[in-house]
Figure 1: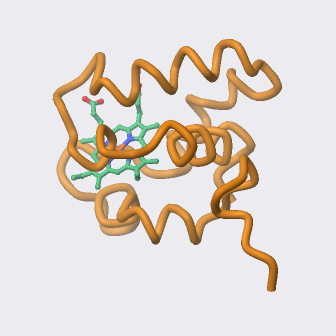
Figure 2 (figure 1 turned 60 degrees about the vertical axis):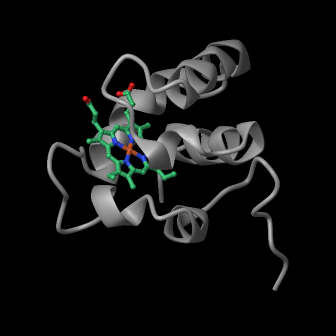
Figure 3 (figure 1 turned 45 degrees about the vertical axis):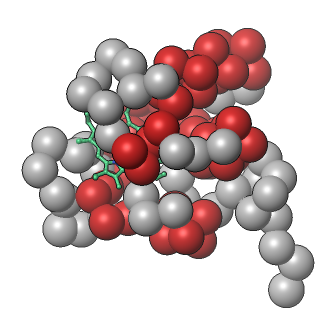
Length: 91
Ligand code: HEC
């Protein structure tokens, strides 16, 4: 099968590969919102590349919340792919 992990077409496998699922999967860890909630929140960036790009930058700096290593160590490409995946519904 083709792998799109380095492209903007991320999928849930990318979330597994980057350990996102350890906090945002079931059971949720600590204060982490579920993927459904994140998808709901990021849905507003769907189709708005400029807004998403701005959010990716903020997200990678660990703002506005506490610093989370799993967020900050993402490459810009991986962060964009993952956040775009969530904006598209996180399925
Ligand atoms: C160690 C646990 C942990 C891991 C691993 C983790 N997160 Fe998070 N994430 C959190 C927590 C906790 C919050 C909520 C922080 C807050 O709202 O104060 C959060 C918030 C978010 C948000 C919301 C940002 C916002 O502005 O509301 C997104 C999007 C997100 N995570 C995506 C991811 C992705 C993608 C991955 C995989 C690379 C990931 N997270 C890995 C704990 C984690």
